[in-house]
Length: 321
Image (tube, rainbow, N blue to C red; front, side, top):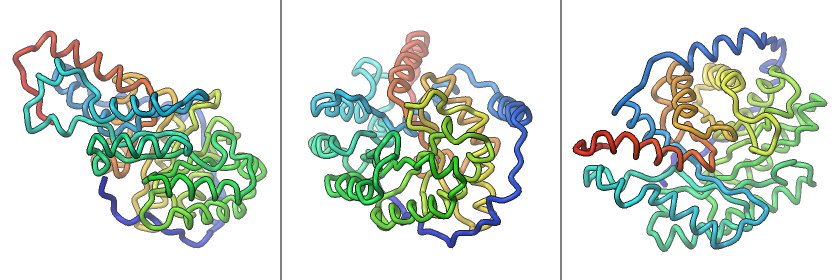
């Protein structure tokens, strides 16, 4: 998939993370209001579901991942719906029905690269690799940097790194910034860097905001909520705090940084709530694979099931993408 040049770091600025005070109940109220604005139903809902599909990083991060299940993942990413379901799509739209990326462990990147190559989809579907001691981040820095380099060598076009939460909890922001800058260097200016904050282990909403800002200062192209392995993953209130950080960073630098909620987005209803939150804060320009992703393993199955129900009731209608 074609990309613009990746972000580069900006100088560390401690004033950007000082005097951060957030009220949880207010955040929850605002997030609920913004994500619930606008009703979606019928064929309009189909279009939102298809939009969510094209914004998804289809993910497998299991301990028993193998070449065969990664190949199945790639096949589902490239051809997510049954032949019967695809008959409802207009011919020129069919080739747009695929996910934004697949997301796998570094040791499985080569499998994904080879399978997507055989499917002739390498220019359409990105290969994201989780790295840097995922999910804990508790490994020596040089080991984590080597893991990034290995994933890129095997074909990864995006790297989802995980921050060391110890640095967040101890307020070692300059050290966190320095580590992420080193990760940015290994990614170069063509491989996109997505930084996982593991929000459920950051300690507070204020720390979520600060970690978001540090990640963007260090050159992240995306900030991502979670590994999916924490007890608390992507929630709309946390997403709103990260959005506020993205908006503040854009005001200071002019740069647009992407957002990736991961963990807990399982249904079309969940996805539409997130898309409404984005639309009503960052705007329609963020609803693109270059600036917004869902990290999910089961969302695509739910989208297919949802569309089957719609098409069963409206069999004569062709769908444009």
